[in-house]
Image 1: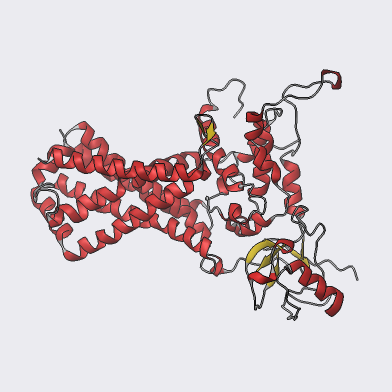
Image 2 (image 1 turned 45 degrees about the vertical axis):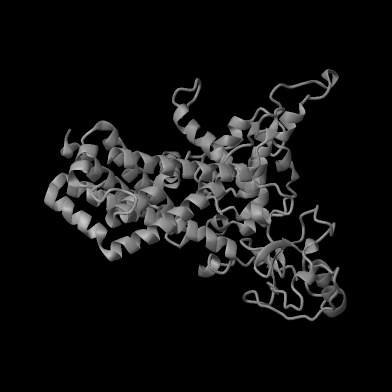
Length: 133
Length: 122
Length: 238
């Protein structure tokens, strides 16, 4: 009667795609692949810059090609999702913060981060326009 | 009494991951827009904004070098750490080989970037 | 889910039909099955009001307390009930919690006073602000839903896990306690904080809003800084 035979179940491969929450997690993690891809695009540009004008012009030509622009459209969407998901999880990484005697809610941290993103992107664009004036 | 547990070395990679993730979150979208869409199509920026002369001038001073180095290397170290853990999630457990693969790529990118930025000179 | 270790090679599923009511819980449905249809069905339960933590199960794939999950959420059904995920199954819906219990014991889940006071000296005093720092983490009912939710625990049960780390934090953050350094020793390990990838599903399923994801991840920065600062801290051995 008292036969113990604990059964250990395996994690199914579909653990992350059969659940909406966990699927979003995996998408968030996967954004890093394209973050790296963009870094390599820039690295190619820096490398070409080092090799000389002809090599750099080639990089510029590739960047101006339709498939490159389309790819960067995809990259833009991915980076925007990275920014969103980064600040969405940020409240979990912080201890309780008190400002003016009250606890700062998670939403304030997320929207604060997104506001900082808009501000930083604006400064970057402004800086680029000014440097290339 | 608790036996001493081996401390993880994850903090080194995690801090790099965090710095890269923060930089990517704050500046990534606009960097992609400027370099991959606006400049090639001549939107918003002047058509020669990212010309050879402009970019060389940018890369030939210290702030420019730091900016380029930070963006490229922090982005790849961010991705390496995330992918190392995602491979674990997908069944390729964290081990020396996985670590060497993921962080090896980011290390290589760091060295290439550093070399190129130094070679460009002042 | 059914699993009889004396006769089943592996878990299987059995279908039962139970009467529906707007106010009926999954726990009540299980009790109906045991009382009226099949007395051999085994499952844990006690308070039936979401405070004892006994009736954790995977209901339609999601870790839930059966007493707090209502049939009306799934009408007209069917409702799939599995034993709580990521734990070994003893029998039917009863899992072995031994791993969780031993991990809980290992982090010393009790106050080790920073400064001892004798009974004559009176109570340990604490301000409301000091209480606020750890109060939400005291709400844990040890139901282990967070372990069923956590994919990292599922992939590698060596992970200390969300609940235990939240409880370690509950004591570390308590102003009366002085053993944070000791507990952090376990948290600094790969199987401690550093197996967590901030999925956040643990906090999503917690029936008491303990937010274990916050407990784990807010300690990462402290652990990371300590990794470097330990070389200049007095009396640090390694």
